[in-house]
Image 1: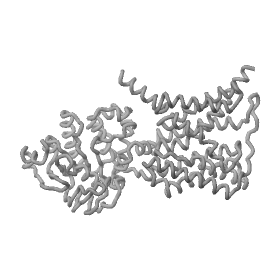
Image 2 (image 1 turned 180 degrees about the horizontal axis):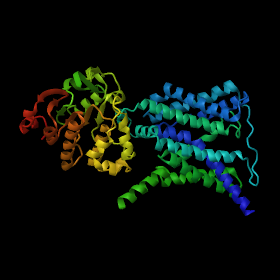
Image 3 (image 1 turned 90 degrees about the horizontal axis):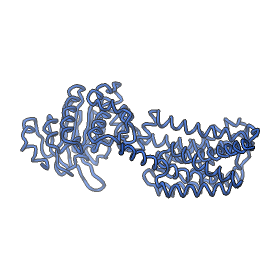
Length: 294
Length: 232
């Protein structure tokens, strides 16, 4: 019985970890690489979910419907970046107000266009044996880790990644090295948008799709970005692991998802109080002090 | 190679450069000297395209580049070393050097071998984060990064700033070698007497945003002729 309990706890952790990673990653890329706090992040996820569900309802197989969601969200992000966001680089507060406005407009537009609910998609892969829950959550866990690994490879090992990180650190010097920084910003925003769309697509089968769908991801996304700190990928991984563990432990012990969520938020408050620059900021300070003392 | 004609540039509403005329021929090392706040950095930024010209023209390799952005000018073959180095602190030395590969699209020769010959420490510390290096090492990295793409023209903004005197002598020697061995034309702005006298073949003096004198090699050898334009 203890073994089953442990498996259930592990499954619960994986489910929450995957949710936090996937909710956060698009926001973290856009904020971490470009300094834009995208308050319309939830609505980017919404675009991915609606595109997926309508593509599926139109007869596309689920993987293709999800791909449609990702591509449409990337295109949507690209258009928005060219029309609005690119005028807001370096203007943090302005970007927050504008993206909040975009969020409100999009929710109402979706409500007007599609009503209060979209057609549902059944959860694929069926139930797991032994553990209480659908096998699809295991897929989400694997994909969450895969997304982080893929992003790490993209930003650390490719020419694009080196140029993107250089642009983030000093856009003027990057320009003087021949880098088209405008194109770098555009591409990075499209990647962040595509990731949000991917999240919307992946959770379309497991969550009820309404115009408010995106707001269901925002708490975890913003909390994880702040707790993670300045390093986009490592920060997202560590924050998701830490917050997911706290949530899973308390949910499991109390058998209440509400208490699990409250415990996670309290843990986030304590972390930010003790580590104002987030977990990766704290680790960087420790690393620098270690280097100085050697 | 480079010609500035009646160049004017401002920061906001404050005019900084006024009718600047400068010519740099292929293969030359030309200096522009002046005290603090006379427009040296503004001039280099305007040549690089990081500051828009209000008026006048900038011609590079016979083409008018006045309205081109900095990245386009870099890809044409202008390498730039900013004041204070401005290496990418969180990128490794090797990643910083890779950033220079985009300079000078027309040249397919990447100069890793030459750069590592001039500055062996860059090869030794390839995996070190650039921000953790000393000022002199960061200056070597900034020069190496600008040279990687084999630029036709190298622009330097006060290469001696924040670098200890013994390293300044080495940098002066290295830059002269770069000019001789790679054929790179060099335009630099400076207020360090040693660099002005030992690096320049010809030098302009700038004051209050305008060129006030041009010194050939004979006058450059005279300390008095040079110090007149520097805060020495």
